Structure formats: structure tokens, C-alpha cells
Image (cartoon, rainbow, N blue to C red):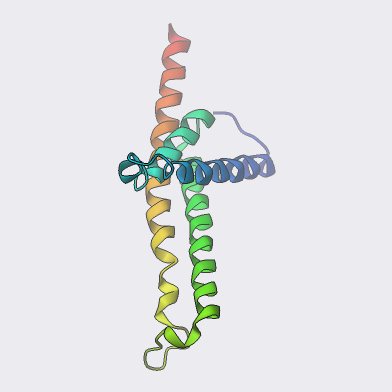
Amino acid sequence: MITTHPTLASQRIAKASLAGVGISLLCFLPPILHFISGPLGPFIAGMIVGTRAKVTGREGLLIGLGMGLIWGIIGAVGVFVAELISAESIPRYGQLPVPPVWIIPLIPFTYVSFLASSGAMLGGYLARKEEESRARA
């Protein structure tokens, strides 16, 4: 296992997370395939990023959490804009200080984090396993 400086590892994970978000966005572009590749986009992106970077399980988890955080922020910005545009149409229930609509960003965060982490860990595992088998041969 290669150990790197913590700052370099953080930058590597941040770059991989951003690349993964870009790849998952690209999965929505093909007109007919996006019904399959769109929902699986975070897994596909995690798999690609994990394979290219040969990540460990921990790094794969962090990449997935980073991708989920980015998608959660995008969701939060969407809710914020919706509140700005039509605040009176967003219902408030009881004595809650914040409308329940703010739960919405947790959905993409959870979904993307799980799929992207799974893909990145699997891709990293397979890439490292292939590298080991090549080293033995």
C-alpha cells in the first residue's frame, strides 16, 4: 500500500469525487440509454474512478461520500431557489423551525453516496487485484 501525505490524499479524493460527479452527469446524456445509465450513473462513475485511481476501500468510501455531498449540495441549492421563488407554496407543519422540504437533499446524498462508494470500492478492488496478478506473472 502506498502512503501519501494527507493533503495529497485529500486532493486526490476531491478530484476523484468531482470527476465522478461529471461522469454520472454524462450518464444522463444518451437519449435511450439514460433510462438505464442514469439511475446507475453514480455506480458507473464510482467504478470508473475507483478503477483508474486503484483506490482502497476507505478511499472508495470517501470518494462516494464526496460525490454524495456534491449532489446533496446541488439538491439543497434547488430547495433554496424553490423557497426563494415561491416561499408561500412550501408548507410548514406544526412547530418545526424548518419546512420538511429540506429533507429532499438527503435523498440524492444517500443514493449517490451508497452507489458511488460501492462502485469505487469494487473498481479499486478489481484494479488492485489485476495489478497483483500481473506482478505475479
